[in-house]
Amino acid sequence: MTLDFKKQEINVLEHLEEILRGVKKGALVTTKSNGQVNSMTISWGQIGFEWNKLIFTIYIRSGRHTHKMLEESNEFTLNIGFGKKVEKILNFCGTKSGTSIDKIKELGLTLVPGNEISTPGIKELPLTLECKIIYKQLQDKDAILESLTKRFYPTNIPSDNASSNCDYHTMFYGEIVGAYIIE
Image 1 (cartoon, rainbow, N blue to C red):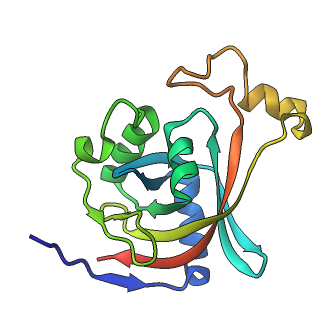
Image 2 (image 1 turned 135 degrees about the vertical axis):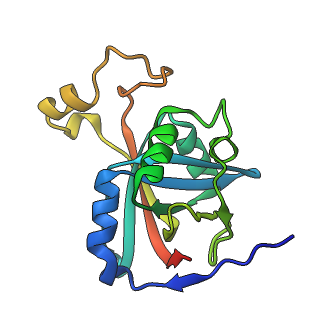
């Protein structure tokens, strides 16, 4: 049985406030590699223009399962939603690793095929940006202010711990190639 989903195409610039508010509260980054779909909660991101392209930049710690999948797939969707159910989804996806659990299956999320990329959107977080990675760079730890390093990259939590925060982020620049709201 094939499910049909309606997608209302949107102009990203007309939804900037909603996108930024969503990222600040928490959004999902979803990627697909080797047949596996994984979502991870983020609250850091930025949107802007570079190389005459509309870009969404995500920051993913190098030790995360999502990082590995992004390296393999070179694409992602940004999924934004609001409400109590979304808070539960964000909390779960922000505290569990895709290496040990199928978060999509566990939460009963509805995957919606992408228009321009193979990574799906998620019906329960309907505002979707489809992004193709066009540049990536690991943060230079020596270029970050010491006060920020102490706050965001303490060395007292091993990088293989689920609560790890000592490994640095890779900045993934995703050209926005599609944007819609799943209805």
